[in-house]
Every structure is written in structure tokens, then in C-alpha cells.
Length: 314
Length: 296
Image (cartoon, rainbow over all chains, first blue to last red):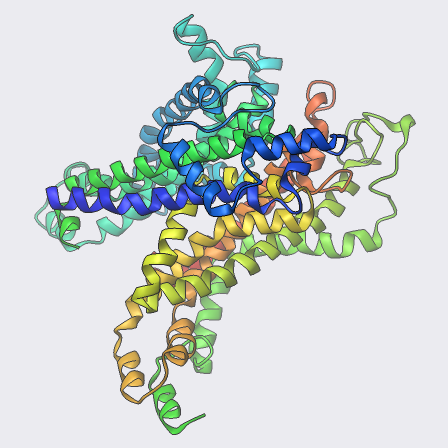
């Protein structure tokens, strides 16, 4: 296991370097003069020159990348033009909101998605299976922003049950925080629950066709026990690998959800950065999210190896 | 064709191209009798027909402003109602389908071709694998929509830039699928035979291995089409999609954001059309998977 862990940790290093290279490249794929684009059409020559110097765009590209890596090592992601302060500081302030939203949606997704998938597989080709899979299919088909708006119309405007936007930190009022995040988390979870239910159903059906399940059935083990004791444990192992994908999907969805519900998270920061052409903010936010994903995928790999020791020998 | 290549080609297993008529008929009959696939194909066909024929037969102009007809709810005259400029939403949705479907198709073509090339080379040549797949892994670490937003923001607003951004975001997915199939087939008997017969690596890869690795890719491309339609709408909604007043589906919904209480139909109706289209594509993809690759 130790060898496997070290191999996986070492394997993450080149990916992290590549991730930082891609985030660095973002400013260099801007067509034409990046400093001119960032400064906007009305900028003076002095303002453009100042941006060029601040971002180091006047230096050779290799030097720019080495300086970027050196700054990264000190968690210096540069200065935000729109906020007038460090990007790292802005990210640290906003990341908890995104993480809390993602976590909340995951808390809804994992039990509901797995349960729905299991029931659908158990009731294969019966009405419950069709009903669950239709809802799951709708979940993965309806746009997240449309579901959010429909949710606001129903739960905030008509029923007046939940707030239509805004964020209350948990340190201020936990209940109000949960209320402020419930509608966004539900809108975010709809796609993920659909995805997980579909994957769990497919995995369970595959497992129910295995020889050991047939043997258990032939021995006269009840169908509930077959599903609960034999199939469930084996369904969980492949489902764990899906968690990385689901977190990735959740973070994608968070960009839209935070904008609609006015949540001061990382996704909203990216969108604001784009509208104000604040590239250090976009680069920094993307980099932090990607590094977070590398870390989550690493954890998922290790958990998978722990649950299924055969993986270590691959 | 050299003699060795001809011999090697003759030992290749049946692909869709090489299949006999009975096998093709069997697959076709399975495809036609799959209920979900038929429903999905019908929905997608209707949307495609509406996108192609609609603008030719419809009288309305998607850009026509009329302050007398602002915020009209759905009626026999305006099926999806009108927006804050008095524009007919149904006409805009039909014209928008043209743009949104074209973007989805372009993403499928570019991400499919690029991903196939990268995945095939990485799966076949071990030395290239390390470099290419590290780049793909790094791209996959970025949540796809965030990556697409970042690229679209850097390249500037425009339809072509949206296509590039989404293609880059989805390319790693297709590359991984093709790589996995190629790696499985790399040591297959018919590939070894071709190698022994002296066939070159590129010919083995593109003539023998790739045609046999297409099923999982074709299935996944239908899902990428669906995701691209959703992501394009999300990009427009966030203001980095095709520039307004182009009637893309996302732009129409974004227009309605400020009026969701007074005129919910501006967002609700186009959203249902997007949802239906994606649902059709998902049903079609699920059906293809059931028939072409039942193991998945």
C-alpha cells in the first residue's frame, strides 16, 4: 500500500505542473496584445504599459513562467485589478462558500443517487425502475440554470419557503445559512443525483449478473439479502470512483448557480473576473479549483485502492 | 496496397465497415426495436427539422422589435409569448436551435477528431502516452465549464471561440475513451498478425485498431453533443457565449433573467426546448450503448 501511495503521490506532481502551465497559458492565448485587451479600448498608452509591467508580459516567456511558478510556491497569485488586492486573499475568502455549496449538494446526492440507482436495479424493467430512470434522465437533461430559475419561481416567489438569493455565513446563523444554500444545492444536486442513480443502476445490474450472486440465489438466499449483503458492498466500490467526476460536475455547476443566487463564491468571482477582464483572478481561481480536483482525485484513488486491494497490483 | 498489408487487412476482425449484410441488418433491427432510442431519435430529428426548415417557412423575424407586443404571455399567436423587446420567443427559439445545434455538432466533430488522434497515439505508443495523457489529465482537472469559460474569456466572445473552448474542454474525455480501447486491442491477435506481416505502425493503428475502437467513442459523442448544448447555453447565460442579439438558446434565457417574476415564459419555454433536446440526445446515446456495447 505504501508503494502504491507514493506512486500515486509522485504521479500527481507532473499533473500539477501541467495544470499550472495551462493556467499560465491562459493569458497568453489572448489574441493580440494581452495588456491592451485587459486595459480595455479606452486605456492610455501609460495604463497599458503599466499592466504589461505588472503582469511581467514584457519579459521572455520562459522567465515569465519561472516567475509564475516561484510566486505559486509562495501562494502569490498576483493582484486583482477589479478588487485592488491580492487574488489569493480573494480566493481564500470565497472558497469556503463554494466548498460549502458543493458539500451540501454532495450530502444530498450520494444517499439519494445510490438509493435511487439500487431501487431501479432491484425493480429492473418494472414501473419503479422506469419512473426513477425517467426522473434521473430529466435531472441530467434539464439545464442547471433553468432548474435554478424554476426553483426560485416555485419555492421563493410562489410558496415563499426559501430565499431567492444571498448568503448567510454559518458562523453568523447556521439555520439561515442552510436556508440560503438549500435551493442552490438542490438545483446543483439534480444533475448529480441523476448521474449517480444511472451509474449505480448500471453497476448493480452488472453485479447482479455475477456468478456469486447466482450462487447465493441458488442457495435460497432471500432477494433482500442478495441485494443488501452481496451486491451492495460491491456496488459501493466502483461508485466511489464516480465521486471525483461528481465533484467536478458540481464545481462546474457552481459557476452558474452562484451567479444566479448571488452567492459570493469562487464561481461568481470567475464570472466577475471575466466581465471585468481581470485575468489574474480567472487564472488564480481556475488554478486553485484544478489543484483541488487533483487532490480529490488522488484521495478517491487511494480510497479505491483501500476498498479494493486488487487495484494496487495493476 | 502492399501484399503484406493486404494479408494483414484480411485477418482484421469484422468492423461496422467490414460487416456482412446479415450482421448489419441484425444491428439495425435491434436499433429500431429499442424504445428509448426510437423516442430519442424522434425528438432529435424533430428539433433538427425545426432548426433546418423552421427559418425557411416561418414568417416572423427573430430580431424584430415591437414595443406594442412587449411581455405578452403564451397564446395562439405567440406560442412561447414575447420578451421585453416584444420579440416572439418561439421564432427566436427556432432560429436559436440552428445556432445551438451547429455549435454542438462542431464541438462533437472537433473534440471527436482531436480526442481520437491524441487517444490513439497515446494508447499505441507508450512513449507518447506519458506526455499526452499528462496534458489530458491536467485538462481534466479543470471543471469542464470553468475551463470553457476561461478559454472563451481569453479568446474573446464569438461563435468560433465558444466552439474551440468547448472542444478543448471535452477533448480529454474522448482521448481517454479511445486510448482505453486502443490499449485493449494493441496486443490482440489480429494486430500481432499485422505486425508480423510487416505492416507499419500507423497503418496498424489507423486501419486495423481504430475502426474496431469506434463503438464506445460514437456512444460517448452523443453525450458530448448533449453536454455541449447544455454548456453553450450556460456560457451564453453567463455572458461569454455567442454575442447578443444572436438568438442562441442561452441568450434567450439570459434575456429573461431580469423578468422571471413578471414574464417567466421568457426563461421557462426555451428551457423546456433545451431540456427536451438534451433528453432526446441522452435517450439516443443510452440506446446506442445498449445495442452497440452492452457491456457498458
